[in-house]
Image 1 (tube, one colour):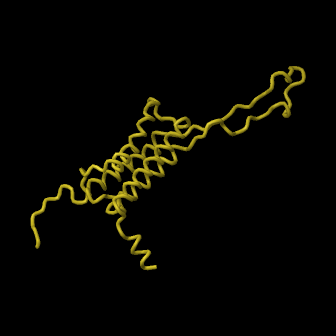
Image 2 (image 1 turned 45 degrees about the horizontal axis):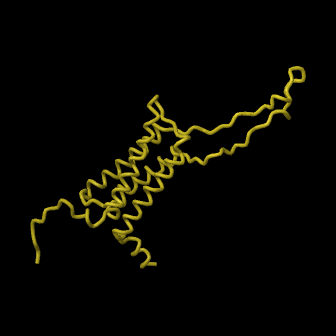
Image 3 (image 1 turned 90 degrees about the vertical axis):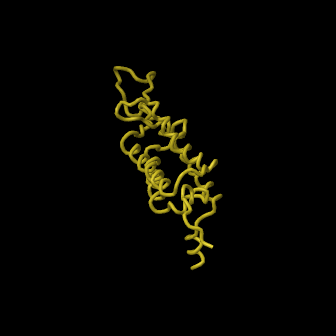
Length: 175
């Protein structure tokens, strides 16, 4: 039991950190892609702004694949927290989901003006659509909340060794 807790408390390897970043970015890309058709932008903003949602996973892909050692630890904490807060605000304010509704189908060949329309003549289309879609709004907010938590609580475990000492000046050399 104590060994398991000690293992969980350890910092993951650089390889695991980078793999986690890439997988998280790919999941976010999939959510945006599959929810693109049912996502709408509020406040009469152009619908092309939905493409800006892809900027968030691109940052994770670049950090996961290339791992540029150019960000200090404290700066990375605020970048992650800021990205998460931005994703949460975009989800709450700027984007919404449009429900995919199918219209009621009334067969015109069986309806006459004299007989009227009976309930048996009206058929409802099945609620299933031909394409698969996700709720981008809700998932985007959820992933933003996860990023805020990671930024505040798990920042020391989310940074690779290349970035841990970036920008620090060595003033004393101890032997």
